[in-house]
Amino acid sequence: MAAANQPLDASIPPDEIAERRWGELIIEGVIRVAGISSIVIIALIFLFLLREGLPAFLDIPLRQLFGTRWYPIEEMFGLLPLLVGSLIVTVGAVAISLPLGLTTAIYLGEIAPPWLREILKPIIEVLAGIPSIVLGFLGWIALAPLIQNLGAPTGLTAFTGSLILAYMSLPTIISIAEDALYAVPKEYRDGALAIGATQWQAIWRVVLPAARPGLMIAVMLGIGRAIGETMAVMMVTGNAANIPSLGSGIFFQPVRTMTATIAAEMGEVAQGSLHYSTLFAIGIVLFLISFAINALAGRLVGVEGLRRSRGGML
Amino acid sequence: MTNKIEVRDFNFYYGEFHALKGLNLAIREHAITALIGPSGCGKSTFLRCLNRMNDTIRGTRAQGEVLLDGANIYAPAVDVVELRQQVGMVFQRPNPFPQSIYDNVAFGPRVVGMAARGAELDRIVQESLEGAALWDEVKHRLRDHALDLNPGQQQRLCIARTIAVKPQVILMDEPCSALDPVATLRVEDLMRRLAAEYTIVIVTHNMQQAARASDYTGFFWLGELVEFNATETLFSTPSKPLTEAYITGRRG
Ligand SMILES: Nc1ncnc2c1ncn2[C@@H]1O[C@H](COP(=O)(O)OP(=O)(O)OP(=O)(O)O)[C@@H](O)[C@H]1O
Ligand SMILES: [Mg+2]
Image 1 (cartoon, chains in turn orange, yellow):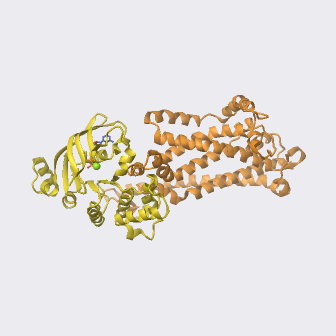
Image 2: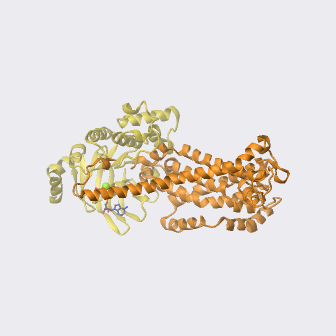
C-alpha cells in the first residue's frame, strides 16, 4: 500500500510516535496470537481424535471397517451403512435446499420489492436460530406421520431427515447467496438491460455467473451444515444401521448417520474399548469429509474467482 | 436530414422531484448530438429516458412524448426490451461483464436470438469488434477475460457489445470520463465513424469534446433545455446569456 511508504507526519512529537508504535505492536501481537491459537486448537482437536480413533484403524481389518455390518455388540464395526446413511440424507437435503435456497435468494435479491425484502430477510434469519432439537421434534410428530401416510413403511426415513436438514440449511444458503447477488454491481445488470436483455436474461447470464463464487460458498456452507447436524437427524431418520436397498424407494427407508451413531452410542461404551475408538474413527472420517468440502470450495471459488467477480467495478 | 428522435413536452419525475421540465427537441439521424450542462442538471436522466432505462428505478414517472421514428416509446404497447435493442447505451464507467471478450460481444446477439451460433456468431463478433476499433488488439485473445483489458479497451468493448445487436441509436453517458486522453481521442474517432451508420447522443462534461466531436449540442440547466443548436453556432454565437456564461466559464 502506498501509505506505508509515506514519510511520517513531522508534526507529531517523536515520543508520541514511539507510543503509537508500541500500541501497534501490541495489537499486532494479540491478533497474531488469536490467529495462531485457532490453528493450534484445530490441530489439537485432530490429534486428539487421531489418538482415540487410531486403534480402530489398526485393530480392525480394513475390510471389516468398511464392511456393511454395524453390530457393535457382536464386535462388527462396518462403517459403510453409516457413511451411506449420511450420504443419502445429505444428498437429499442438498437436492431440496439448493434449488429452493437459490431461487429464494434470487427472488429476494432481484425481484421482490424492497418492502417485502425488508420483511422477509429478518424472518429468514430468525429461522436460522431455531434449535435443531425443536425441528427434530416437529419432524417427529408432524412430518413423520405425513410421510407414512404417503405410503412409506415408516415415517422415520432418510427423506424425513433430508427435509428437516434442508429446512435447517435454507437460511444459511439464502442469506449468503443473497449477499453474493447483492455484491454484483448494478452496472452489470444495467449493461445487460441496455442492450435489450430481459430481466431474467440479465440475471441468468450475467448476475448469476458474476456471483458464482459467493453462491458456491453458500452451497458449501449449506452442505456443511447438513452433514454435521446430529440431533434432529437422530430423531427422524429411524436409526437403522442398514444399507438401504437400491431403487426408487432408497430415500424412504430408515437410515442411521455417522453423527447420530456417535451421539447415540457414546454414552454406553467403555472408554478405551474397540467400540469407543471406532466411534472416534467415525469422528475422523467426518472431520476429513468436512475438510474435503472446504478444500473443494476453495478450489471451486479460488482467489481469482473472487477478484474477478467484484474486481472489475472497484 | 431527418429527425430520428423527437421529444415533445417531456417531463420526468423521481418521486416528487421534478428532474426534467418541459423538454422539446429533435435529434437528427446519423448525427452526433452532445448534451452539456453542470452536474445534476439532468443530462443522464434525459439520456436514460431515451431508452427507458429509468423504468428500472422505482418511483419514477415520465410525462409527454418521445418519438422514435415517429412512434411514441412511452406508449403502453411498447416493449421496452425491443426498444432497448434499437436504442443501445454505453455507460460512464466501462462495465464489461466478468466474462470473456468474445462472450461480452456475443451476449446481445445470443439474448435477442439473432443468428445465435457458430460461424454466424463469430462473424457478428468480429464485425462488432472491428466496428468498435478493437479487433486488431484482441483478435488473438478473444477467450481472455474482459477485465484484463485496459479501461480504454474495456469501453470500446462495451461499444462493440452495444453495436452487436445492430441498434439504430447509441446513447453514451460520459463515455470518456474514465479514460486517459489518448483513449478518449480513439473513442471520439470511433464515434465519428459510427455516426455514418448510427445516431449518437453523448453526454459530456468536457466542452472541448462537445465542440470538436458533435454536430448538435443541447445545453441543460436545472432540468431545462436552455438552448439547442448546431454545435458550431452554439459555441460561437450562443443565443442565451446563460449558455454563454457556462461555455465561457468552463473554457476559461
Ligand atoms: N435515482 C435517482 N433518484 C432520485 N433523484 C435522482 C436520481 N438520479 C438522479 N437524481 C437527481 O436528478 C437530478 C439530475 O441528475 P442526473 O444524474 O441526470 O444529472 P447529470 O446532469 O447527469 O449530472 P452529472 O453531470 O453529475 O452526471 C439530480 O438532481 C439528481 O440528484
Ligand atoms: Mg450524469
